[in-house]
Image (cartoon, rainbow, N blue to C red; front, top):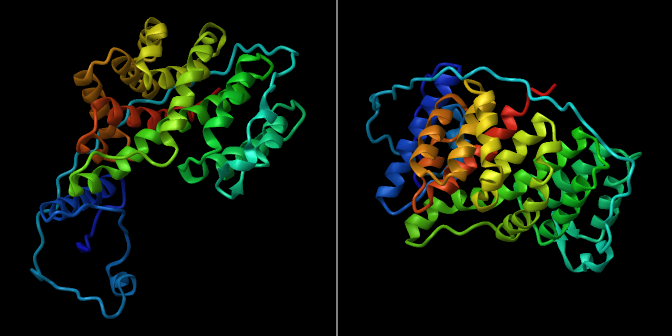
Length: 337
């Protein structure tokens, strides 16, 4: 284990956070040079170091009183946000077909808290227009099927039922948007797992491996996407935005709406949603150079993104930039009218 200590001070703003990130990348480089890899990290007052490492942990000041130059960070002003509307909207008074729900061996599957026997009831509750939508959805995904971004054996089998709820036309736009968002989050778990493993894999001389069940989940969204894309012309802008970002993760399907993504990117040109739509278009076109350039621009102004995503070892540009798209789209979606 290598512990790199730098006690700053740093500006208490976005520039300071980026400077701390740059110091962390410098420490990771040292680890890689010695066959190691970065895994997590802490930000705390330097006086906490003894507590974190323990009273007997060796601490060596290799160069006391000196430090490398503080990284020069240029924080780029983000483009303006733009409202994404949920109107016009149209929902029909029609039943939602969840047939086949009882044919899945849920008791043999698992979620974050054990056996997935409760998943059918939660899906049925979600399809009830008079139920507690927010609480049920949070329990189903935030607590069980995608708890803290982790996939489980029950996650992929549940996703087709979300698609049926969407394509039924029975749900209002806000609820459809919620389901599209969870499908986008689910689709991105595969790339997130690869990025999480990239440094360790490079140190061990092997390709990065995805997280458990994430490939099944990624494939499940792939299978549902064609049916979802047929709804493009009936969805309001906020829903189209998420659907475009999801389609960009699967270019073989995304080409069906490439012209529409391009047109929407032009409509939102110069805004945060427009930047992500431009990235979506580059991914659907499979133009790696353009996707990398757009993603690099986005990372320069979206401080929540990790610049290391774009420098991951042994990962395709489509994987790294697609993760930037999926992570950032949800933030750009915050301004809904």
